[in-house]
Length: 349
Image (tube, rainbow, N blue to C red; front, side, top):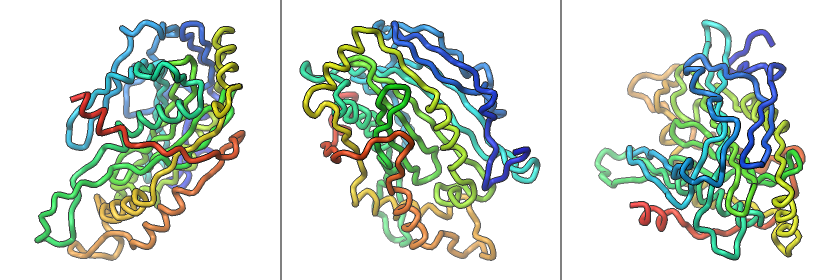
């Protein structure tokens, strides 16, 4: 298309995608992606990572960290990260009238898990899913913000979640590797994340994250932006990139993966999901913030500009439905995990 629109934003032309290759201590990572094309950031910031990295040199890793709504920075030293690739692409609507509709970041990280029990390996699907969830739980899922009440006399210090997830978790085969996939839904105004994870050694896994940030006038919250700028084109672009990805493991690691995956239950396609309590709380938070930086047409300054709560609830119910990806496996059992965030926070200080 020549021009995009808010309902159909124009992203980068995938026909301009060129091959990108990374050497991670003999592990060959290949994919295709267009050059960075975001007008609101410096091009020099992106694709600046070296073509070759030593994933066994822990001095080049950094702890997993997250800055929460409160402004507090938390570090989790048991999960070390090494950035292998980064880029950003802008999406546009009608020139002048709508302009910029948002962007998508693509971040590839090598995650090193230093505290795995001696009898566990990331080549076991359950272990990989658990560790991918742990990173999500320590960051987005544990990120809360100050809530509020309609009653001006209510002084309760409400603490609300900022994200809902995991959503739409599943296993997908891409480039001869199995990837654990899931999404998150922001509840205030933040970017949403979709992520693919795959093991590359017993203690290293690759995380491919696409962070989607949409923008439109008079739509400054997570619910209203959904009504203005659909995520479809952003998701389609992410899938286009991932459909080109391939990982070539060294022979010894290929044998190790095959050995582990041949064991009973190691290859089971366990999934993760959010609880019913999380879903109901998300509906409330999304509704309460649905007038943030938004004015409903035809309403005055003193009117309630929030969305219909039934519409918000219907959106969340639709959002959490499974949506199988191409080459995905039938879902396995839901993996029940005890919360690890509080323990890790205490250890991190």
